[in-house]
Length: 350
Image (tube, rainbow, N blue to C red; front, side, top):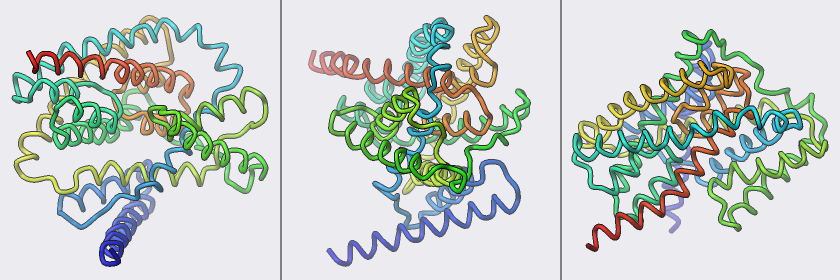
């Protein structure tokens, strides 16, 4: 037991050092989102080189609560007043998901030879962990699902800043928050309490995405009640980016050459399909005048909720618009997952 703990601690120490070096290098080179892309890049390379890396477990999950608090603090009475304006674009989310399923399932089934359960859950743009869990319970290949979704998140998170800066003129330099020294101590303590209570309370209630949605719900209520008036300090949001970046890279730990040429290649090809579909819906929503182009782009980008929250903050996009659309997408995908799992099980039994 002692040897196992020592090995685990050594692997996490190596991961932390590698991620820190990546962050420092990206920061010194003045590259965008150094605290996200630095650890993501170095952990990805380390994973592909089969370094003995290890994720940070509950620490990484705790870091995601910071984003939940940031989103909740951005939900003000003004954002609530804007909900009717978002309603029409939100009605396109189910259509968006249906088109993805119609295109994505045959893509994985016929072109790449995935079984029915793996094909469906690989195609669905839900949360990475959620799709792996639901897909495995439905009889899918957990490793394939993990790699496909990790590839999706990795590529979209990497390319999104390029598109935002070159096609939308977004500088990615919006202040992510005030420094901790500028925030009232009592509000910081309230945000910490909201993060912990929301996270653990959400888990106890079985709330999906509890680490983000729990803190978001509690902080939104506090924001609407006028109890808090600030987002989490900039330092906290940088810490969240650091652990999210590590997590994306570490998902490729232990990948084999066969997996690279089949599963990861399938994931890369599918991202191109998703990008075309997302671009079509982004153009439609923007053309109808239903939202600001940058916010619409981020709202329909089929990546992770946490990663798109970070990009929405650094671009100064309408955070309420972005997160509302992502929540709608994730809720529809997750609610539909057990239904599809049952259908697949009945077909297999038949």
